Every structure is written in C-alpha cells, then in structure tokens.
Length: 202
Image (cartoon, rainbow, N blue to C red; front, side):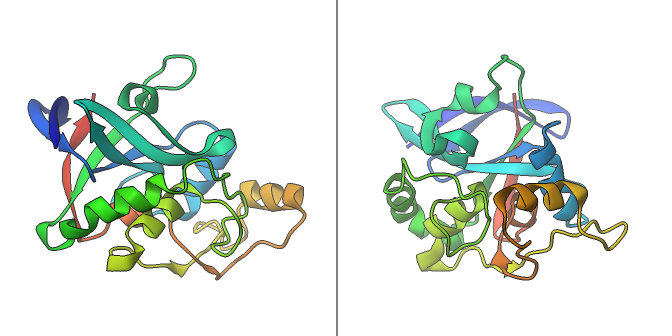
C-alpha cells in the first residue's frame, strides 16, 4: 500500500507515494545524545542524521515504527514522528530500498512490530536488551542482510579522542565505552547504495 504525501526534493515540491518499508531519517537535534551520535558517525555524504524509523501504512494512515528514548520501540503516527513535544518540526528525509532489496519488506515490518514495547538500548551494544533506532532497522532486515554491522567508534574525528558527550554517557551507565564493537548508525544507513533518496518530508 502507498499513500501520497507532500515531499520536497531538489528545491521542488512534489507529490510522492510514501510506501510501507520506506525509511525516514531525522536530522540531529540540539540534545547532547543526538549531537554525540552525529558528531562521530559522519560519512562524508554531508548528511547529519541521528534517528531513523520505518514506515508502515495501515488503512490509509501512515505510521512509523522506531526506537526512541523513554518510549523504546514504538509505533506512532507520521505527524508525531515529524515533530517534537513542543510542536517544532524535525528535518526528515525519506529513502526507499532499491528493487533488489524490497522483497523482504513485509517480513521486516513483522519483525519490527514484533518487538514493539521493548526498551531503548542505551548501551548501543547489540547483545544487550532492547533496541536503539538503527539497530531496530538492522534487525528488521537482518534475514536479507540489507544492512551490515561495522565497528563502532565514539571518538571525535577532529581530535581522535573520545567524544566528551559519549564519555559522559557511559560514565552515567557505569560501563566502558564499547569502542570497536559491532553496531550501526543512521548516517551510515542513509549512505547505503541500497537506498534511493526520495525527498525531504514537509
């Protein structure tokens, strides 16, 4: 199923059919965690994402399944995903899997839906309970190996030292920074050659 929404791309506004399985990437926010994610995961593509969710369309309504903070893995309306609790809109880009990889979308939605209610994984260690946002997307498409895990880094690329935000984060958790352990992130996923850019969601 598809639903037409207003997207803008290349400075033009177009009607485009948003489909189940499309991925929505949110730009970084002023929060310390969002900034820390973006600062250490740049890919050279000029994108600054810190969050991602997957679209599901039911009865002509657009929902997004994603994992976020206190909510954990949840399903919410597109409008809720696009704005914060103060009504301020996030910057969001839409991407679609190429035809070669689209066959597993139904199973991916089932897998993502099956873990709704699981907590957010604040350690970012794959083996730990819960899911962080890109981990959820990786997990959803894991049977088809759409996305791969790569060694994580929590170091500031400008200095080569651990990012201050991540040092504070893991100090609060009371665990060592999982430098080099397998993981994934929104910037890396958005740069995948398996995805096609659709536009900026208004």
